Length: 68
Image 1 (spheres, rainbow, N blue to C red):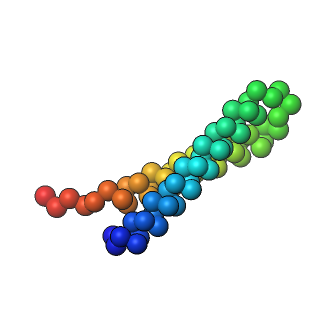
Image 2 (image 1 turned 90 degrees about the horizontal axis):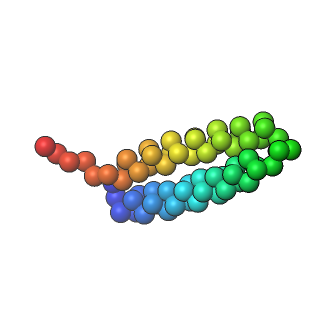
């Protein structure tokens, strides 16, 4: 992976982590509201899980391949 690609991946990772944290805060706040739209909460949780998968994939791309 080239250094430009690595930096772009790191920037993207930081953006995704921020979005993941924001979703976590929103979901926590909605969980305290008994009138919250449960469909919206489920959609936010699904988006959060999808972000987690993308973050894990990008993190694995940053790990250098080790030749045995």
